Amino acid sequence: MLTVHRGPSKVERPVPDRRGARPSAATSVTQVLNVGSIPFQEDSRMSMARGLRRCALMAAAVPAMALMLVGCGGNGDSGRPSSTAEASTTVPAGQHNQADVSFAQGMIPHHRQAILMSEMAENHASSGDVKALAEKIKKAQAPEIDTMTAWLNAWGEPVPRGLSGTGHGSPTGMPGMMTDRQMDDLRGTTGSPFDRMFLTMMIAHHQGAIDMAGTEKKQGQYGPAEQLADSIITSQTAEIAQMRTMLGSSSP
Picture (cartoon, rainbow, N blue to C red):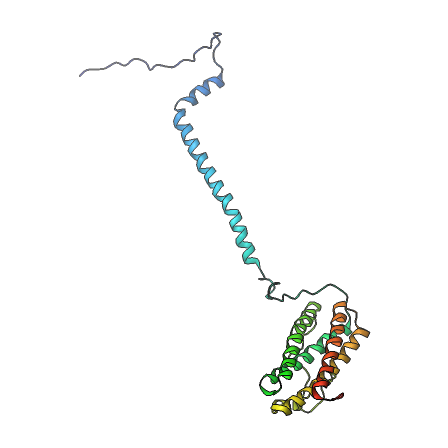
């Protein structure tokens, strides 16, 4: 059996610098760390590259997430239509009082009844002039209902439903409003009798609206409501004169 004698392990000694001084402890540590430094540096570079890629991906995702949040935010908290649909009716700023509220709450059902009467003319009237006038009334008053509804919503006031307050055979409390019985009579008439009844009833209806608008001008405070009252007085006074001409009389 052979015995192999190995010499003592070679111990690396610090190499003196050019001035002959022994290297410091820090220099020794640096030299030790430098052993196998290539794999260490490669791993560090790869980790840094992966980190930079993750940061870039996160930075690119932020704008997309922001867009998603904006798109989803919309009107989720209100449950009301958006400004483009809501009412695309913008309510001007301004002080209002109870007279303004009463004007809007009374004129909305008043206009609705005028529109209902005008819709009957399409199939019941015999005169083309009556049909044209009815269509004009409908197109003018429908947007005004939307405007006054927006006011009441902005003020936190209730919006009347339907014709609000009309009862069979009883007065409505609003000037010029027809009773249910009068509406039934108009609905059951056709031809020339319908034309005359429609014109007669609409003249009275317009006169009532003018009275209501006059009250708003005297007692109201909200500028847009007073402007609408002025418009109602002007347009419906002209239509009354037109309807009286169509009836062939200076009075209903």
